[in-house]
Image (tube, rainbow, N blue to C red):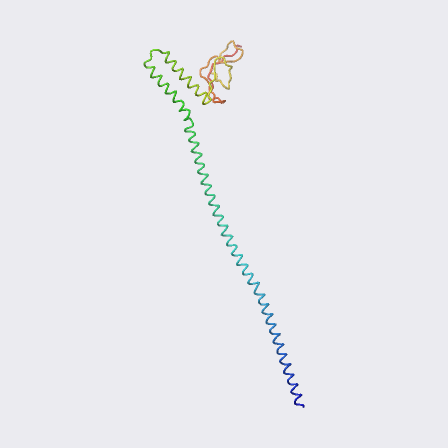
Length: 212
């Protein structure tokens, strides 16, 4: 009876030992699991930080490449515009020079008819016996020339005897006294001319003024 009781106690002691061992094993397992979780948690931020740094570094390189491309494009546009402006400047200078060189081409072309008529008159004058016919021919050329200049180029002559003296229009090359109420033209040596409203040549005149 005593042996049976001792065996029972031994069996219970073995069970308690096994249970304690199992509990210790479970505790150790939980500890290892916690350590593993903590270690993983510690490693994840590090991996995330490294990934963020790599991404940031990659973005910076891409941004630098974009800026370099934009800079190259701007330089190309600047060079193109500079070339266009230089070509425009050269073209304007050439057009200005052409206008200066050939601006009177139309006028000179219109004067050729009058020059041809003068040549014909001179040829006719060699065998002419009547001076009046030569004078009439010259008058016709003069009338045609004046009409062309007035109607096509707005050239207007001024200055006739008896006109009031105007220093803005007339250049007095002499002055005399006479029975006049105000200064006027006594004689016109050279007519004056206006191009539209601008005086391009003053009339050269003799002026008569009231006697003192």
